[in-house]
Length: 598
Image (cartoon, rainbow, N blue to C red):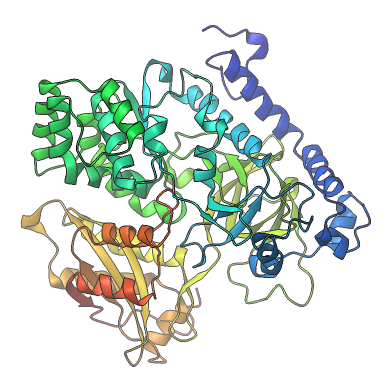
């Protein structure tokens, strides 16, 4: 469809008139970022002026930034817990928001170790939908022809719970998928999916996954992109295909539905699309029965142009496995969001995963940034930290994200550490660095997720010589030994069993990890003898699948589940230890001298 050049965008030529309007919105909003931020804060403060929380700090109806910053403190979830608990228990007075709290959005079960309840209001769905509506117009700039096929996206809902006061509590994606915004979304030729709503909205994860996979197989030539929320979700789908291809091929061969599919809505949907296709069934059986699954995605879905998954932060360690199964297809990270707020989008979604930067959309909330000094031991207590406005952040510096939302979070610390990589117009672009939490500590050492990931990558270099990669990992600070030591659980993908890494090689991996860890850790190992040799425990294939199943059985969301990078819950420890096939220890001390203070 030709688009009038008068409404073309600096981002690139839009695919259609609808895209042109979306790209124009991005341009206008980012060009006027500071004015938009000023307006957003004024709207939030004026509408919520009579709330108990704002009156407590004597804002007296002021809506300007200076007054707001001088009287409203920066807070964490723990600071807000009493108010959240009152709302959860049924108090409907305007505590945080003048608009009624419509539900609670539960954070990921493995973010900071507990499921937090984030209050939200009905109109937030409009804001989330607005950000979703910008994703495909941007993607269409980079990948032409997406209107000629479909997307195979593995999307899931979680059965929601209710608070004592009767409010729903559920993950943000479950809230969105169950909303009319999603269920009655208008037809968009650039965003057609193979999965019917009935399959996505089924709370039974087996039936949902089975039917979504079946639809994707039947329409395999139509599929132009595969996706899930996180990289781990897409790998879970591939694992599901490995375990269930026989039954899936049977259904395709006979045009009948697996008797385990009992959901009436799904059965009706599948009955409409299924017909006996023996040739397709033979093809699937042939491809899936082979031992080598390298490139399986492009073998089964040959027209796939990219994978749409989050591979930033902790998800980065899935990249080698995704490359193995996809034959190196591009990995697109499209947006940055959380239960608290949707933040922004990637304006260059086909960039390398290591180069992903998200442009904050200034209309989503009021954003401030707490300068983060990685090597500073200073606390934020004492002298009040100076928060930086959205347009005033500096390229190359790291910040902790602080938000003020329409739903009633005021100067709330999200816990994400971001590094400024540049600007689009006057809106900054950020690389997601990590969640702000220490993972491992034995003595005075403190190892965070980014350090552990870097150590993992260093050890993985050794495995490459043996055509082996780490599929999944987690860690544990074992203090039952004296001295205590770090335990790393590895699940390996050995692509050439005849050349698998030996016991000695895996011992070297332990030392390689230690060499990468910070100087405080290495001092503890070498000089203080306060930390024992690092241990790697290799577990059976499928162990982390069991770990996910266990977490889901305890209420975690399949969409938001992330493998915890550190574990200390006894049943999880017992599950992991029962699957260990070999244990390996660092064979020597890492290098350390008093002068090396990195």
